[in-house]
Length: 477
Image (cartoon, rainbow, N blue to C red; front, side):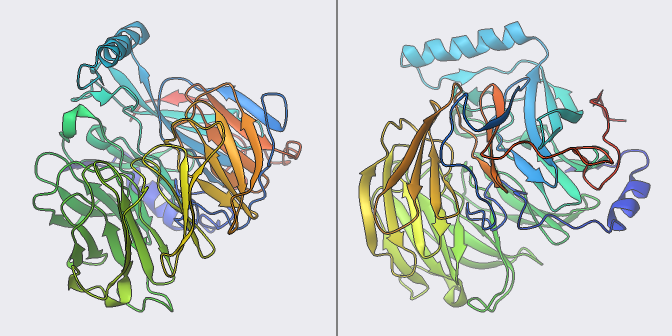
């Protein structure tokens, strides 16, 4: 691992640590699965109906390419993208991959061409660019699957530090005004069939956790959030490529134990002590290509996968110690219609998930695993990569072709609305206040039933009440 702190980092670190502004709150959407890590926005009231000419606060074009879901902290939206140094060369590489797919040649991978790895902040009011930084410029060492990108991992923030994970192309920590605090090179991944990378980092307290499952030596690593210094690293023997983002579970009334990091995987799903990296428990049973991120509710963590098989395991963390196969720590197992790409959603005492990446929905009782309903087809929906989200008694599903279905959150299958936009969506929505933010392949949308908020006297789109910076583009110092 290499680590580099830019000039003036020590001063910036001290300033960030001294900030008195509030950290990312439950009203924000500071990570790709939301404030509670489960797809729910407890304080949001997003719209039910929208179209290109209804309930759109703004629609702005996005440069480059990326599948990273947007996050929202305060009055800023943070996005990750790659921008090809030679757009024509990248287009030719994409077309060559598409031709492979048409000819059923495998894998239909987009070959590397030089890229700029870009981090940007935009205003929640009007989508205007506040700042933009090029974290790195390089030729990616590996291809990506035609439907993926070199900017697939989503950013994460704790309200002070913004993490931008470009995988093999570097992990970068910024303050919320775009100043680089540190960067870390964890090496080069070699993913299955050159599919590309996608696991996002997580922040808990002063610790950053990154999972690094690939076709060579896999590991999980913890870093200090303010300096990037490595705190611990634990080998993950015999694990192969996975794309699931880890889940951190802290002690609560249902789980009075150590704060742990839960990582699903093809070989064994595991729980690690966040403080030391020591393995607490392990459980086999997931399918290959583990992608869905686990969710947690009242002592149970739900692990899912759905490629070349189906598996859902509900693990009681209070009982989870050592190998869990055949123990009471596994509360229930469900082996039908589990997701390959989208992650599950916890809404109250209901567990929502889609089959594979199709439009077939199942809802389980989160305590018992009993089926509430299953094999319900979302009308008009094709393939789905975006994970479902929920708020205000509703659940939202967004398909790759721009069609969306809004359901009532309940024990019966009730469609409240169907909506369409002129873009395709693979990134998951972010729900904040009365607004849903959608990152399409070409545009960023803000959907709301309310007009744009008035610009504050001291400048719109600032993180902590300062004047609004002009749109800028800068490189590392």
